[in-house]
Image (cartoon, rainbow, N blue to C red; front, top):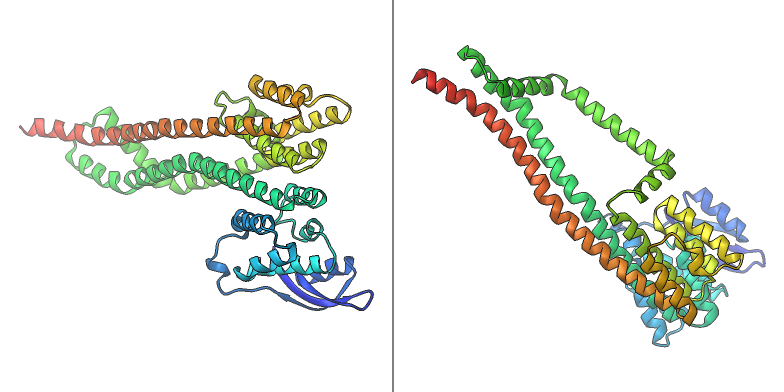
Length: 389
């Protein structure tokens, strides 16, 4: 979402300036009006280098860590934001300056961050609010930075698991499609000119090649339609899909969900966010609606007086046992951190094992296809050579 610099006046005639995130200038003006600011000037923040820079959210972990280090060193919040802005370019510089200006006007940081909800997630803002209330804002930012780093590593590992096989399959399909569409038809004409009876495998190959050559547009269109149908199903039947994912025999995604939920809940609870609110925020961050509904149901039970361990039934036994023990000793945040580490390590091992298994399987499948093509081409050549001999 675009960032706009603005200048204007408040209802008490005092001047105000800063930045705001909005879809358009008109939306920016309406948002400012809701805040009691009459804008006299609104300009979109533009940088020539924005195209070549990484996405703003990718820089959030580093900025969070630097802010935590500054605050833990005794630097004031306003001065910390100003110092960070000096090392940033257009996007983050404007954000940090805008936050500093709001702080200088008397707002708290969490309230100021609500103007940039696309950049600062709800759990992030809630943790900052808890840190401000407890006077441990520096520690909260350090904890947030650690959490964001771990979350980034998990996402990168998951992307590797999904993208690597997809790239290998796509490359193989493109190469085989090219061979079937352009190479095999030429070889087929040579065989036809020889008037030699062809083996069944060769006839099958020529049939498939002819089908590819004549109907590749239909096949391509079918693939696109299938992609759109899958996307529609994922959007409109998300609950069904998520329930199916939880019941899959391969538990890698379940492990990821538990790791993400445990880490988020532990960080939120350690930052002072109430347990029910922490559960709701953690549920929204998991990435599976069926899992989210289960956690929200648990939050309702806890708000009615149930213990955390009893409300979270349905999780693995190790999870339940550690949580029950930690709840009794009053060290729930530490217990959640231990659980998160266990399942993060388990997810990494499962991902590595899956990749190491998929690679030879994909190579074997591609080798079998190439072997079939080579065998179907060479067999009639051997027969022709035998006849000539």
